[in-house]
Each structure stands twice: as structure tokens, then as C-alpha cells.
Image 1 (cartoon, rainbow, N blue to C red):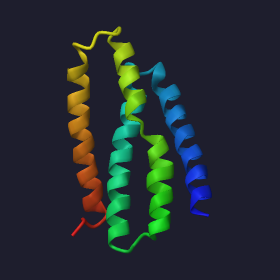
Image 2: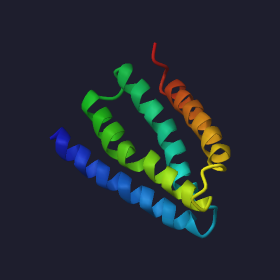
Image 3: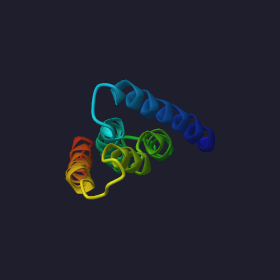
Length: 120
């Protein structure tokens, strides 16, 4: 049953990622859609992990949400490709976009964990 849940949630997460990217494509610089879902996913996954650790979220639900929904929603590789395309295939400018967003992702993961009650 968990496998089916992960598969269904993964499909939903992938569709949400695609919809966000399409919606933002003409409104923002390339790679923004993937960055937005990666940052939102970091925040949400932090909360899922903390809630699961505190017994407030069933472990199987945590797997469905974490691996299925959020695993499909967030995508490092898509973000890298979209960012590289934005910079015309030149990697020299990638640092200015990827490093701050990676730091922000880690910070949002921490915030999500705190919102979920912490890990301790």
C-alpha cells in the first residue's frame, strides 16, 4: 500500500513542479520554478521529518509525503539544467545563483524542522 501511495504522491508532486515551472517561465528568469519548488520542498520536508520523529505523523505517511510528493516535487537536476540554460551554457555565473539558493534551502530545511517540533 505504501508503494502505491509513493507512486500516486510522486505523480502529484511531479505535476505540481511542472505547473509551477510553466507558470513562472514567462514571469521570472530561467530556473526560478525549480528553485521555488526546491526551497518550498526543503521547508516541507523538514517539517515532515520532525513531525515523524515526534510521532505526530505516521512513518508510512512520512514516506509517502517525503519520498513520493516532495521527492518528485523537488529536483536538483532540473534546477541545474534550467540555471545552466539561463546562463547560456556558461558555468561561470552559476555560482551566484546556486550557492545562495543552496544555503537558503538548508536554512528552510532547518526552519521546517523547527516548525515540526525539532529533531530532539
